[in-house]
Length: 424
Image (cartoon, rainbow, N blue to C red; front, top):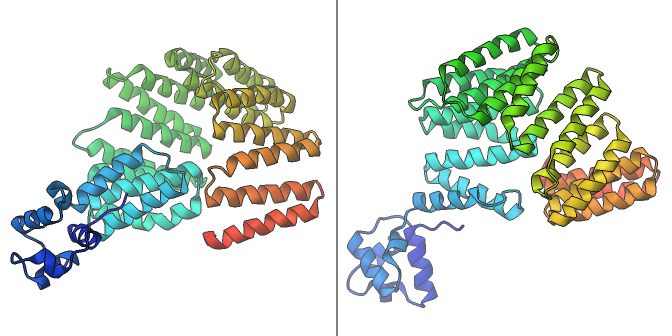
């Protein structure tokens, strides 16, 4: 993904072909001018570039391909690869720095959004905090309402994962207002932002505000008959969650509507059931919550799909959190077998990890150690430095818990070494 100026391309090719400045110049161009072109201190006229391309046997289109075009192509490539790989993350940061240095602010904004989104998914709050001031600086240089919506929504997400729900709501409100003012108003985007606002209100325990916002949602639905079935399913799901605490009849009505509207999208359907189970668990309705999870597991087609494995793993996490250890263990065995069939290293790692946590809770320390090491072996095949740091901390804590002090110190020391390099 290397980005080269026209001058750098000329200089690199000239040196590779073993030509001096004078030999390349001939009688067409002065040595001093060619030196300035190679060092990007002067622009070359098209006829000079055609002459240079001919002498160096270079493709003219490649030679004059500007930095902005190169960055745009790299962006498309980055969109289609796994950014979490360390080298790919470095490529993203390299392109971002190059875009900023060369005042390609439209591309710089896209790259910053991609980087910010990556850190949001990973919930790397320290990195997000460091990026936010640069993000707004780039935004202000693009003068785009659409970009402002993206920025406000991203920062809202940052505050949401930081559990600063009031701040998140402020940014989501801003995103909604700017989205409504854009020349090309995207209703689906506004609907999604509103649903995020409602999630903030629920986390702030402000059910009155959330129910008022639901009325806005219903108004948008009435005035926009073109809303898709999938969007309607998400809306019904959000409305159901709002009514769970104060109106069980409406909760049942809208949760049923959501499940029906999700249709054959089993992952979204079962994920909604998992959300309803969490609501029940938090309300102390433990058996009702378990019913929702089991319903989701029963609904999912046994098609050995990645979505099936992902749902099983998410369900296991909830079951462990709310101390349904035996039920979690039963599903965990299925998830592990499915992950191995799929040959998906990320799912294999999570399955071994949860298996270790289950064994630890059951007091089977030898098995817990074995599964945690298997999980770590899988994780370290793709882990970033931060993920390695977090796993070493967890390994150290596990060994401390089972009174293996020497091993605990070993992993805490490894974590400390990485912490210094991460500057956290």
